[in-house]
Image (cartoon, rainbow, N blue to C red):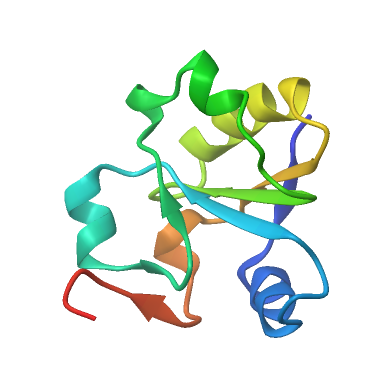
Amino acid sequence: MVTETTPNELASKLDADGETDLTVLDIRDPSAYAEGHVAGAENVPARRLSAATLDREWGDEVVVACYVGKSSRRVASILDSRLDADVSSLSGGFDAWDGPTESADD
């Protein structure tokens, strides 16, 4: 079973600024990502995940975010089986996130 990270836990980790090598992976479509995403998140839509993408360097911890926290659990499970990192899903997805965001206009 995939671990879930709450929005508050993620906000705390992001506030720790450099204490962990954290990657936030946003798997939503590019247009949703452009409208707004967790500040510093990287966008790799779920349909574009490939072996090459999975085999890159990810860091010590990866939090996967989707729209509402369902697809991210599936992707987090795949990543968890392939990465030497702590992988989790953002509980409630981007819809539950009330921390800092960025958009294409920023």
